[in-house]
Image (cartoon, rainbow, N blue to C red; front, top):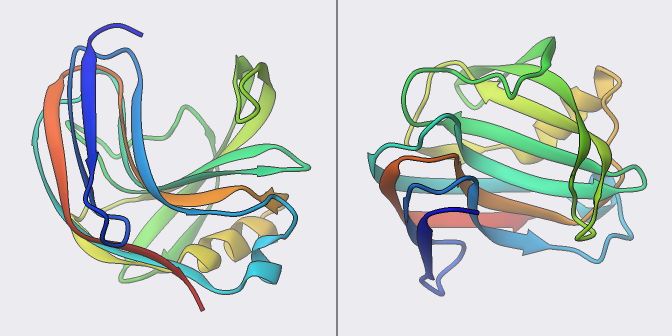
Length: 187
């Protein structure tokens, strides 16, 4: 879209930095990518650890945390630990439940995207899942598989996994982020 943005990958774990200015929708992410043939339970226990600093602003929306997709069914998902500006965000979704994990409480939302860009490179109608931490933080451990299990208990079913990556997504503003520590792992 509009504006400009850059991303630098450090080559250690999932650490990266990114900066942006007046972007319409900018996503920067690093982490694990799979071959879309296994569910999260078949893959193993997925988690992440991170620490970062941020500056500036991010316009009308922003998410910092874990991001990814599944296929069959196609789902886009977010585990959001922080954001720019006021919040917490909701992703425009319907509140489905809550999850207490990793020292915080997350609200779980579901939202349907109609004729929007998807992981195939085309556009379609698909469902998004969000876990939004109610108290933001800039470092910590994310028990990703526990979020997936909670979503399943609420009827929010992921398909075969495409990715689980540390993310910053912004919709405007001028700012930057620097992940000094970042890993996404499977045990």
